[in-house]
Image 1 (cartoon, rainbow, N blue to C red):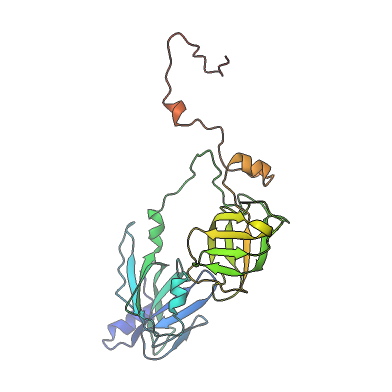
Image 2: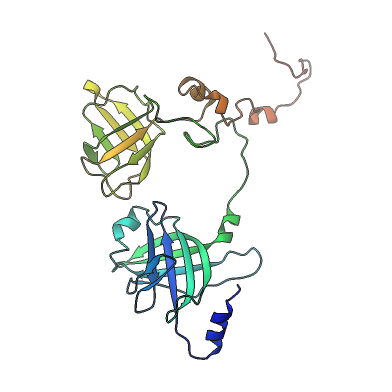
Length: 296
């Protein structure tokens, strides 16, 4: 890490006025600033709040490809850090930047850390969040898997299917919620039974706005009533009247891509790749072993 000369001179003076400041940018675009100083600091268009209940351990960095991790921890005593937002997963994977800053002259500072929030643990009214450095991505598998089913996500840049087409999504208010994961609608016609299974369930308004779930079951009942069940309850439960968007599901099979979505030109799987049974096969004496299809 290269420190600016002004900060080097300040550190060499023997009497320092240093503080740490962290900016957290959530995936929904909300940006929050925190500092362990006793007064608010402002730079780069961000106000870093003091008394936020958030502090951090010493940042550890190393050369090479080792992962640079540290921790941020604090009590849930700030209006900016709400327990319901942590429960709802709004801080999962959020970008984090950390500075060492001269609070007497905030122009004298250095960016010490840049990464993401990892695992967040709540206990006794407090939180403990792991900060993962940029080298953390080196622990993730890279490359493409050759598989019979499609590797794209329905509607993404590789799939290219437009889910806003009529018949592939529906927006409506929540009517009845059971156990935080089962949503019942009295009149939900126009879609086949199980049409939304394996699809996405997006919350558009209310305290759960921005959360996304995956549809496990989609069943029509008598009189066009419909039950939509999620695999897991959302971090915040939508209330009756909140708007949701339910998108058609895809099981990633070639047949589904061709018949349900008419999108086979963008299919990202390998439906004709030999299976494990073919790899384990062997020649048999007295039978044709030409490699061609066998008839009769």
